[in-house]
Length: 320
Image (cartoon, rainbow, N blue to C red; front, side, top):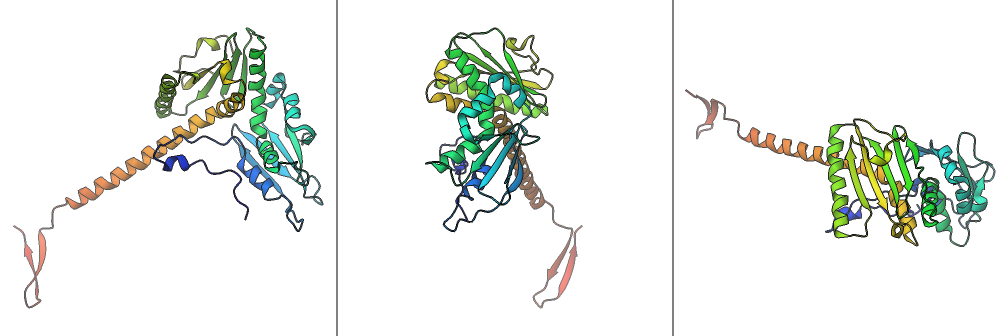
C-alpha cells in the first residue's frame, strides 16, 4: 500500500496552539491515484476509470484513453465557470503551466491533460502535484490576470463578476494601489450568518496584530458600494466578504500562497461554519445526556419497599 501523498492537515487540532484547518488546493484522490500507478520494477500498472467531484462544483474524469496502454492517463476537468475564465486568458495560462500535457478536451469537459506515467520528468512528485492542482490553476488564471494588470499599472474602471457557483459570485476590480475581491455567498439559515460574523471578526483581529495582513470586511444584506451596477449576487440571505489586496500580497513568492488561500476562501468559510454547528450540537447532546443522568438520580424511591429478615424471609413495607 502506498503512503498518502498529502499529510492530513488535522494535526493542528491536537497541538497546544490550535489552528484553523486549511483546505488542500490539490485533489488528493487524483494525486494518490497517480502516485500509486508510478511504474514499479515489474512494470505493471493498474488501469483506471473514475469520476470524482471537487470544490466549487468541479467534476473530474480520470481514465485510460487506450485500454491497452495504462501508462497514459487522461485527466479531464469540468467547471461551470470555465467559459468565463476564457476572458482572463485561462487557455494560455494552462498551456504555460502544463505544456505538452495539454490535449484536446474530452467531450463534456473543459480541459484535459494527458499524463505519461513513464515520463513524469526529473521530479515526479512535483509533476503529480501540478496535475492534482488542475482546478486550482484554472481558478488561479483569473487572479493572475488581475494581479498582472495591477503590476503593469493598467487600471480599469470596469470590474469583473465571476459566477463561479450557482447563486454565488466573485467580484474583482483593479485600482491604482490595490486589487479588491468581493465574495457574495448565500447562507442557508440565520445561524450561519451569526457564526460567519464570528469568523469575520477573527480576521479583523488578525489585521490588528499583523498590519501586513489583507484588510477583510464583512457585510450582511447591505452589499458593498463596489457591487452597485453589477450583476453580483445580492439579497436577504447573502453575505459579502471583501478582501483588499495590496502589491505586497501578490508579488514574489507571496502570489502563489495568496491564490491558494483566496480561491478556497468560500469553501473554507462554509466548511468551518458546518464544523462549528456540528460541534455545538455535539456539546448540546452531551449536556442533555448529563442532565438526564442527574434527573434520573433525583427520582424519589417507590412507596412499596421490599425487606428481608435475618432468616431470609421477604416482606413488603407499604408507605403511609
